[in-house]
Length: 263
Image 1 (cartoon, rainbow, N blue to C red):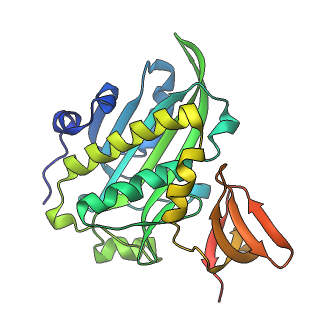
Image 2 (image 1 turned 45 degrees about the vertical axis):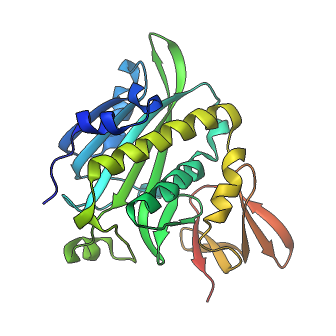
């Protein structure tokens, strides 16, 4: 059984920039994203909330994010931006880059699936849900992003059955969860500071190097409806997916869109 996460140890293991983030660890909650969205009016700076267990975790398009105690790392980071909401389009991809670049330090390679999944051997290893809100507090009205991440640390049979689709996990037995959380938080803070100044452009090549479907034939779906098909090339400097189709090259915006390898 993993030791409980320690907010004091996580903070001590973080880089200097990340130590400005307020950190809370709870045993159980419904959704760390929902919790932080409700707290935005009282926040004065960034806050990370980690839950040992989420009972109502959410993924993209209202899908459930299934978790199990000790088998998943579920957390959300509330971050205030001096940017308009429309400038945050590429943010989920930048967050994916952080996760995929941290994983090799813990003996795992991840690949990126546009727009917001991290894969291992074709199974989903991590998912990202970013929700934005305007909040008015003592500093005036500001744009906040609540960045929710769920990362599979193990895949017991019961959890795999609830997920019901291909999933992957880290080697949890040898994993120091405090170290992993500190590495992710440090990487996120550095990335968000960069994103604030430069947008997605500095992350474009990094994302494309980690692209799971580069050069493969894929279909782009909205729900179960096929809206585009072609060869996946990568993403542009805004985070749009580039496809070579029979009608030429197109750029697909992020949204309720999924990728499947074309059969």
